[in-house]
Length: 376
Image 1 (cartoon, rainbow, N blue to C red):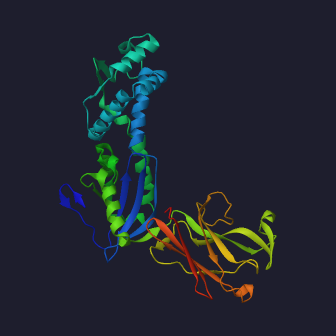
Image 2 (cartoon, helix red, strand yellow):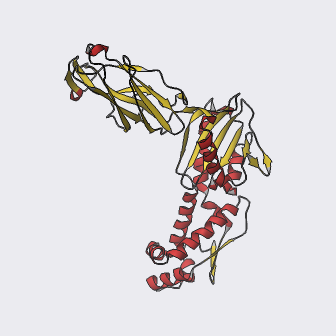
Image 3 (cartoon, rainbow, N blue to C red):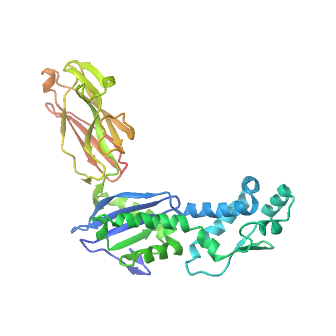
């Protein structure tokens, strides 16, 4: 890892935070370096839609305040190339602006936008701008729009404040409070406004910004693809399990879930949990197998539907926040024994991006496998 031309490495036992500031979102994870050099995720990933595009949107709203929404929408549709050029230029300028900047920032103002404004409003654009709340903050001379640095910096305010507040809240957790470094990656991490805000807000933590921070995530994905075992543990963002039936209990089960089977009155759609939100799971290591018995004596196969949930302990797979990830079905080869001896063993193995699920017929060793998405 390179910072300012030098190589940075974390020693075993180091705990660091990755702040991935991309275009649409900011995603935050916390890792510990183990003695063998592998990484253990210590805290579930978090973040939100506070990426660089939110700064772009603030700039867009500023432009709309100058010319009006109908004019700007027409400009965006009819003069798309000019519109894109405006935001390409803004992308460059927003990386250069810093908290201590005090000079006006100049942008090229497309002639097409001026023409559309005057066609729509029958007003002079210069005079119209002087009637907005930015009259003392911006000037339009020829094809140059000059914006006071205070206005330019204001486009970052909400995104930066939200990010800082979120990291401060995370730091209150005992696990996260041991973070000694913040590693900033992603394209938006190249913004001086964000860099200095993080450094100022967390003076006791070393902030590392690799060269070409915007490419670090891509490079990391390539490295991980070649060596997926480099991460040993992940913190689950969701609860994972399968559906099953249990003996019906009228005092706690929904009457609409009641069904009749060979084994008696059952409750369907029960969420049988394997791991829960916030739990640390060892990657590439199977969970403890659970045993299941066919519901009827005539079954020739047993199916398992795999679910993820945003709840810590959902009761039913139909509860809010539950989503179906996949399905695996195993054939019952040995039907010579009673139903309650036809045990099917089921386990999950969590990988970097996928979950390997395995169903095994205990008596015969017959195995069926499937792969579903590991949402985190």
